[in-house]
Amino acid sequence: MPSSLSAPSTSILQYRHFRFFWCARAASTIALQMQIVAVAWQVYQLTGSAFDLGLVGLVQFIPSIFLVFIVGHIADRYDRRRIAMFCVLLEGTCALTLAIGSAGGWLNKEVIFAVVFMIGVGRAFSMPIMSTLVSALVPPAVLPRAIATFASATQFAVIIGPALGGLLYVFGAGAVYASSCALFFLSSFLISRIRIERPVTAKAPVTMKSLFAGIGFIRSRPAIFGAVSLALFAVLLGGATALLPIYAHDILHTGSVGLGLLRSAPAVGALCIGVYLARHPLKNRIGRTMYIGVGIYGLATVVFAVSHWFLLSLLMLVVLGAADMISVVVRSSFVQLQTPDAMRGRVGAVNSVFVGTSNQLGEFESGVMAAWLGAVPAVVVGGLGTLIVVLLWIRVFPELFNVDRLTPIEDHETASAVQKAA
Image 1: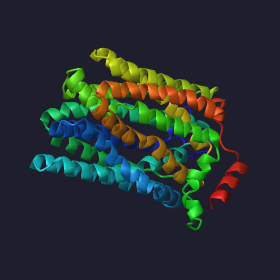
Image 2: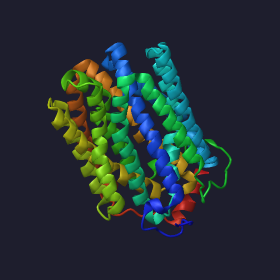
Image 3: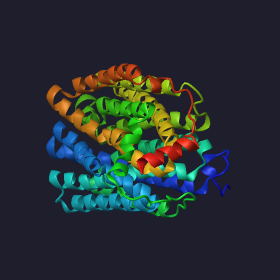
Image 4: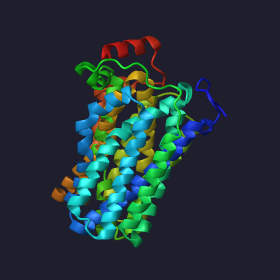
């Protein structure tokens, strides 16, 4: 079993601490996905409002906007492993609160939104920090494979989590939240077992320039800026997951179990692509491949929007997830390989707002559009908007389109970038 990060391994999971991290990610994501299903179904049962479903995403998104620069700076100055561990503990405590509230019968819409806000605080820290930890657990030569494997853990969990959440909801929302709490606590324990051989080193004085260095770094590199902004608008416009309770209840006429299957479907496609890319990483035409993936994502969204057949809807969500995974692996590998370790926290925090939290903002956008236009027109508009963004970005960011290979940042570029950020 490898004990050093100096040489690539034939199997990513042979790296012991990466294996702990993989399991921790799987456990926390299963917990989160179970919780998402329960919250969405519970809010829709309480209010019957598409707008309130969208508000769930907005409330979870708000903390990331206000904390983005603080999160990045903390991640670059302190022990990322400990921060991730405590953030997952916070999410577990929130799940415990929802479980107690459901069992006690005092959980209402306002309390759910308050707890979801605290979950958003935890995820504002954990999302960028968890992504930066991957590069500290494997050598750069196998980072694209590690990211694909790490993303596969997420998708594996997204398949199991919603379906399990839907099944457990038969016994009540409290059963779902209690199970989520146990998994969050398990994830925190596994993170505590990780040992990082390349800890964060020098701590430069905090200045306004260094605080906003993540944005400056991304904007100074058109290919990186194009990649993260393309993902932002694709997810923002094409995300229809917030409306799945409406599709399950009103359009496809299935119950909570069907909702769990719909939420799991994108992860099936993503997992298949993730496993493939972990064994066969992309070698060339990286930028072009990312654009194609986002384009397929938009097309699949449109077909899903107009489908009234449950099996076709499931298939389109599978295709949508597979296309999205291509974009995720390319973007994540490219950004991490082109970012110095001393800046990965700040760049990762900005990237998480651009990409990760756009899921929550996209849910709000979908809820508002559905309230105005209806669920089907809202999703159609979003899918078509994604296709338009792809065409525009090819012209605006040709540097991204022309990226051929994934290569690490050079030493002289690393020194220059860190010096400018200080």
